[in-house]
Image: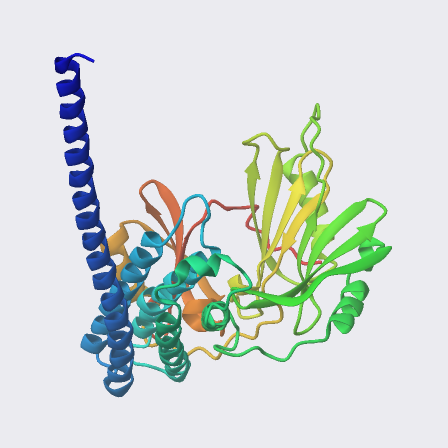
Length: 436
């Protein structure tokens, strides 16, 4: 081998050794930086957990807006730090599902304290009431458990991909956080599961109240009660001669809260049902559930690839001309064959509270006009939602146009606060109130 080739190989070898040594030093330096960042994130999580617990104590003690703001800030920091911690320890090829579930629970906890509690706090004139205190005490206890779990699993997150390896109680805590949020946000009795019918009795009552379907068989989907917006239901399938219908059965009284035909008509038709024809079908279906005065409204939807549909909203009206918005019956009719394809009703038999107006309709409308321009008064309505703890509240109802969109705004007649606002595309069928 010639001397110049030898010298070239030596130079290449030296450069390679120097390069590898430099990359080694750089890798070690980067590793130290990553360890430092991980340590900072770790310390930040621990600090945020302790800070959130302290701020809960302070907020429960004082109930002041300042203490609430500090609690919200602490929870935002905790959720952000937890997300950084999970992301730093995730592997795209083998995601850590336990940590992802924990992150979801932490985000739900953050939303509960930052957004949902905020709504209740403001509606109660910046006062903490008992359901809020109960929830905060539960969260305080869960944060204490989270601190212990965090110390238990820190440094061995990779092992948690193995379902046989103990997660220190993370899964159990995650389930408890989800349950706390569910009962605080959606239960008709905040923080509590109300008394339920057993599944067999609920099915029996559902069968008695769905005889019009000529059911051949009713099968429970799950014996777990689902809770959403104050409604507690068992879900079941009803097998009929016409096919399969999914129903939601009220776990408290056995009423049907939802009906969904699994295979609505999808074929094209040379003619589409008129509003009057569809209304006849919807009224007939309503008669199985309700008899009395109602306000009739509808939407005709022929967009998309599905069949054209009529969506009707029937709102019961009391003898005192109060509209039970809370007890509305929503019935969707196929414009192809008149088949009722979907039905929902959240509450029934609501008794309006005695009126105790602290603000007149006129002064409420004038104040609203300053914000929204033209305002149309729609009468007094009963609302039941999270803002009312799912208890009936009397409201002045107004229709306004915002950004070219029709909206309904419901103002509590006692507090003067808006407790429900939604886009509303429904049109009145006619000015005549129908009664069976």
